[in-house]
Structure formats: C-alpha cells, structure tokens
Image 1 (tube, each protein chain N blue to C red):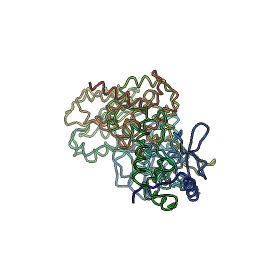
Image 2 (cartoon, one colour):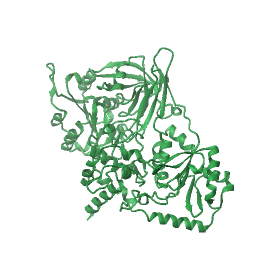
Image 3 (spheres, rainbow over the protein chains, first blue to last red):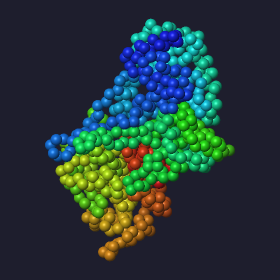
Image 4 (cartoon, rainbow over the protein chains, first blue to last red):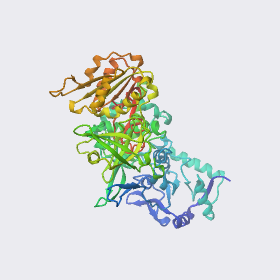
Length: 362
Length: 277
C-alpha cells in the first residue's frame, strides 16, 4: 500500500476534533494581519492558508525559554551542601499541525545539537518524543524566503504526516510509524490515493518552487566552499554597519539555538534551579570571558560570525545546514545596507560571498 | 559520571585542601564521591557549579592521579560571583563538578620530541597539568624547556615547584616578570624577551602555549622566528565555555567549539580563523 492518503477538505474538522481528544493541537491561527501558532480545540480556529509565522512553532515548543536544566536542594544536616537532581518536567503530548517544510528542515539542526548521542538534552529529547509533526506544503512563499535554494521548500523526512493542499482535499504523506498510527486511528476520514493525485502534488510543488524571487545564485552543495571567505568580504563588513544589534534576526531564526543559563532560587537560597533562555551571538557580551575580555567586541565581527555560522559553520561543525531559507530574519530586520537590503539577509550574504569567490576564481 | 542524571547535573566533589597561590589565586584539591578518579587528560577542564550563583569553566591544574583526587587553581575575578564564592570554600566543603571536558594535550604526539612549554600568568595553571604528566614520564621526551612570564614576582604561582623544576638537570626553566620588586633578581620584560635565549631544533620541537588572550599573537610570532611549524605548535584557548557540552554556542571559534574541539588546538587548525588567535 502506498504511503499516501486522501483527506477530503471537509473532513479536516473531524481530524482536528479527534486529535484534540488525545493531544494538544498547536496550529496556525490568525492574529491581526499575520499568523502565529496557538493551541486550538476546533478546526475553525486555525488558518492553514498562512504564508509564514514570526517564529518556528517547533522551536517555540521544543526549546522554550525558562527550561529547567538542573535543580538543587540544600540538605538539612547543616553542612550547607546541596543535592543536585534532574528537574521534573511536564509536557502534554502535542500535535503540531501545519508546519511548513523549512521549519521541519530546521529540526535537523535542533536534533543535531540537543539530541546528539554524546550529551542528549533531557528536556529537548522528552518534548521531541511527545511531539507529532504534521507538515503542510507551502502554497505561496513570502518574498524574503529562498527555501527553494536551501532544499527546504519541500521535505521528504522529518515529519509524521505531510499535507499538501489540492482542490477539495489534502494529500497526506505518511512519514513515520506514529504517522501511520494516526492514519490508522482515524481511518474512516481517509481514502486511498492514486497516481493522479501524486502527479497533482508534484505539479503543485513545482508551481510553488517557481514563485521564489529571492535567490542565492549558488548551488546548495557549494555553500561549504564559501568557508574560505570567512571575514573576507569587505562589502559585508560595511553593510553590517547599519546593524544596531537588536537580535531580532537570531530570535526569529528556526536554527538559532545558542542559549544562556541562569539561576533562580528561593528567597532563603535553600533550593533553586538552573534555567535556560535562548541567547544571541549579536549580544555584545556573548563571547566575553572572565576579566571582561571580549572575543567579538565589534558588532561587525558579531554580524560576520552570524553569517558564517548560518552559511557554513554549522554545516562544518554539526554536519547540518545552518540556514533553511525561511526569510524570517530578513523580514524582522530594520537595518538596511546601502543597497536597501536588510542587513540580516542570509541570501544577500551568500550572494556576496559567492561574488567574491567568482571574482577570485577568474 | 552520573550519566543517569543528565548532562547538566553536577556531582559534589569534596575539597580536601586549599592552598593559597597569590593575592587572588588559590588551588583546591578535590575528590569525587566514592574516591572515583576524574579520569582527565592534562589540558582538560571541569565546570564548577556554585548553587544559586552559577557555573564557571576551570582548567584542571594537576596530572591524572590514580589516588582519586585532582586539583583546580582558580583566580578570583573582579565581579566574578562564582570564582569569588569558590575562594570562600575551605577544606571539607564541596564544589559542584561536572566533566572533564574538551581536548587534552596529545601526549603521545609529543613523545620523543623536545618540548617548549610556554605559560603566561595563570596560563601556568593548565600547563602545570602537562608539566606534571611530562615529568612523570620524563624519559619519554627530549629536552624540556619551560618559559614562564608574569606581571610581578608575587604572581610566580607555585614558587616551590618552579624552584624544583629549575633545579632539575633535565629541565630548563626561563622566567621573567614585567614589573620587578626590589627583591627580584631574575629577568625582567615580557615573555617574548625570553626567546632570544633559546636554541631549539625546530624540526624536533613541539611548542605549547597557554596564557592570557593578548599573549598568543606575540608568542606565536616568536615561534615563527624560531621556525617551529604551526603543525608542531599547540595552543590552549580561553573562551566562554557556558554549557561545555557542544550546545550553547558561546565558545565558538569559527566552526569549532572550544569546549569540545578545544581548548587545546593545533595552531595550523585554528590560526586562519578570524579572531581565533
């Protein structure tokens, strides 16, 4: 049997109602002129026609600010010593419905960092296991997105189910055992697919792929080659001077995973927890060490560090792509370079590095 | 250690002894619960946690011992809450410890080679772990030369050990201070002034550099003058090792994470990265 099913559009409400009985359902909802993900009970609360959201719903759920890493309690024997333990965590099983491919692609980064075999992050791993991902193909990309050049406009793995909107129906691809179980559980809602629908899906994806106007002008497999241009593109340095270091670009990025830790303790200091908040390499103090020596004192250098990390350093270090081309950073950036391009734009940085490379190759 | 507890959770190490090393520096001899060995390599570091205050990366200052203890030497930093409270700890108290982390010095690659060991200031703390390991197997190495530069004679940490190393016929110790006092009869000047006294065989010499961030560039220039290749030079770099487990991103140097790929790097691996040295 194929791994494709058909969900008639009018049955979506039944699927959401069924899911909501056993899971929290996190889906795109309209907020004013834009969309965000929120918890819903019924399908009429969600809007699957959304084009983008300010942040990745998966990063919001899997890496929430304030996550507790360690808890400690002072012993009562008068020694003043503390006993350390793993914090108790609660996380209701959750279905994230309507996740775009670039955000699914970004879990390759969060998995590489937080679900590595050497030091798995307990909170992330627990939440990841209890989160089902129901993806949704992009219909109309936002103008800042270049996901097509980052191989993140369509994904073939990383989801439990993947929906593609076709006339009067969603074509549903099963991507995991859990996805298979879901389809089985709600079998009455689905019908069999056929080759015609598969061709329709391919055509729909092709149509969307041609709608991208923002491009990197370099094949994806050549991004790693740009590493030799780290810190060597003067126009990028200069353009970064418009940046005010507001950290919006890193905040909205689905693959930005750097974090700070801090302590929260009871008033008498007898118990406390070490907590984590997402951080930003654009913060001045990010690379500061004892004695106030700052290894990236200048904003230019911090800006350059971000470009390099997104374009090739995550690839080199973790073996996963550091940018998925969602375009959120560009949309969030208020600083324009002399060409009027938002400074945060990774596609622009890629183009400039590629220009430098092409110039030196001639 | 305590893998079932999760990667961020420290254990209580008992402080066996505290030794003052200077006005702001002290060494803490620690033992893990159950007499377990830390099992570290020279050059590795641990994360030291003070509950309700925070965590700081501290290099291990001793070689591996089978007798179940290790030493960390700590400078109390102005406004450094963690190091300030570590300094209030006494024998019998505990410190939260996790680790060891990072790359150590690759001793096997050094064997049979002449060693040029260069420490500036509290760079002597991590380098001491290497010096101890080398002297424990002294016959495995060629000439051993130690260069040590500090601001003042008061910052000559481990004076007894410095003298012991100096007395050894199989170790050459060259010291200098920047700001001598009246009693100081040794060399004065920056650590780079010691290099003119050296006579090395570049092809068979390994250089190891540990010091404050400002020192590396100038010392590495001297090593170039000595014709010691970057492939035979190791540096131990300081960065903001926040989580120490390859995640938080604060200690990145280009594509490398200082907590996992370092803190000990071969110079040719790291030197081309902007801002690394």
